[in-house]
Length: 273
Image 1 (spheres, rainbow, N blue to C red):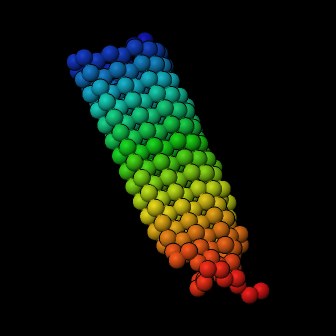
Image 2: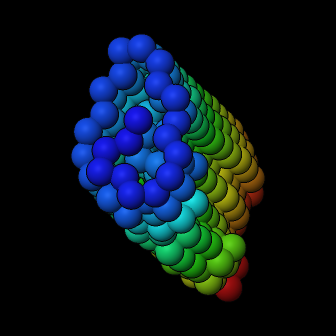
Image 3: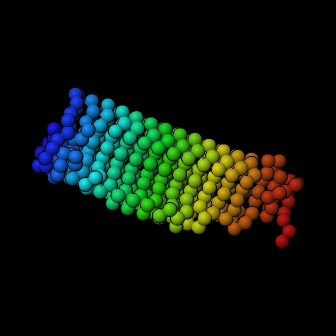
């Protein structure tokens, strides 16, 4: 079954399917507006040599798709996809997943975690993907950049515009947010961690559980550690560090305060020089 299709071939339907729209520029049955339809699915919109496909129970696919081999796909049970795919892909592959946005020039918007959500704009081989269960990913990705929420119930958000750059929340319940460019990344790896900032000169990596880091060229790998600034590292658990190009103000788990040192032995210790 196909609507206004001039190309040959049509896929088989199963029961309780609804589809409507314009597929007037299709070439073959495999590049069809209705494709691999399953029960109780709904799809509508307009496609031109592309696919709009709702292929599982309770799935919903809607929008405008252009380009051979590209399209809008809802293949998870109860999944929802919508938007404009202009030689790009919008795809919800897992149960209860949701995707909405604009993909172009080989960009991909993907939700392949159960109950995950993705929305935004992806172009020039950029990817936005929520593949952790219950995760959320949104923003803008281009030039092979990646915005990815891979941890369960994690959140990844921001702007990526360079090959090798990424914003990734891989820890359970983690958050990664900001702007990553020049092949550097913002990574929230620890469970419940938060990583963010603007990075073009070293990246932001937060590996400690419950840790927090914001800035550029920043590493935070102690549990419940915090760091702000640029070109600093905090490896001490239960501590606080602010610095710019070196150690500035540091507070350890004994509430000792160091200025210019990360090893204060008294309530206030100031490094020489």
